[in-house]
Length: 132
Image (tube, rainbow, N blue to C red; front, side, top):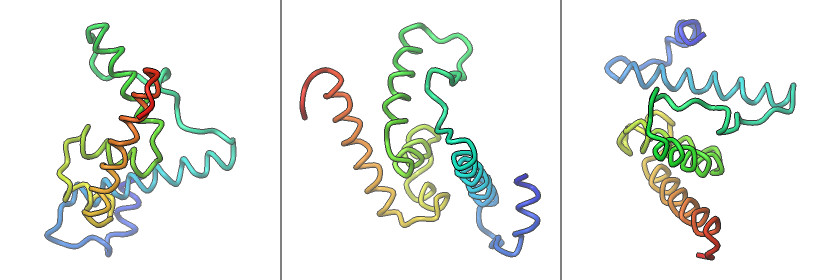
């Protein structure tokens, strides 16, 4: 699907820029469109953390539990913050690269990450019975 979209929109690619980021943006937009249309058609939401597989085939039990707890908290973030967190912190892209991929200003990336860190800290405090 991404290859077809890339061919259809080849005029929007700027030579000399990162092809992988342009293709990632196309793939992301296809995925978001599919999620939106699925929600409209079926009323379905995001996949629950319990239904996702952790890619490491044999993690220690504690690592698996911690990863699920972190993913659960990240999945509670608003979509814009969640995708920014995943690109910057999980995929390891720089703030500038994340901004290019999401096609937003770098200041918006920093703002989203700051808000996400605060939200995650608040979620952790609420779960432990403390109010931040």
